Image 1 (tube, rainbow, N blue to C red):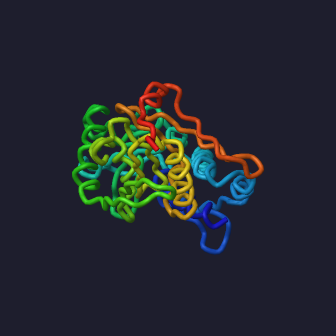
Image 2 (tube, rainbow, N blue to C red):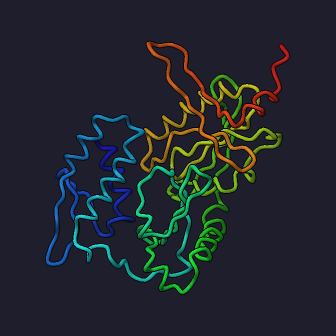
Length: 288
């Protein structure tokens, strides 16, 4: 269950600063007044063992939040001052567990959560509402500052490459090794699309450091299957997994695309968004 430990390690800096996964035991170590608390990972490992890999990030996030609530307030009540220049914005799946009452985060596009974070040299911290209040700015302004600084400092040097998809067509990969803000590029999908994307694009964010884009054409169903398989393989191999969910981005909206494996080796089913049925009807058909 090494991937679960990696997910925990990724989640700890933001929600339990200073906590760490023990190198030789299935537990985390948290600094508390007067010493250290040890929390077993065994219940989490058992829960993940019974669930598919794509469910692990949410299980881990929920577990860390639950542990935080059980510990003394002094463990994470005050994460120290935040500098305006350190603010960044990170886009996460809307299903990811967050303490909406404690941190500055807003829904984005119905499918994501835009979370303001403090980009410290050795970790990311979620910006608490207490920290935000001390900055003397309105929350909406802090979000705008975080977006601007993320674009200016984190998204200008992305590696943008086109790769062939199995079965034809290409996928555009936006990536930057070790950059936890690449998913924020989904706020500007149109900027990164190839020409001729009048029907929008299939998008996926399998890693926080990598985003996939595919221009929609008449082969949208086959492309959705190929993109989903690619995203799933990237999630499985990632140290910063995000989601294998595929979306159809059209006119600024993200519509989930369901890719359902066939039973007993049967054909894969693709369920396109009902809201985009008129677009599907307009797609050019192969002339043969």
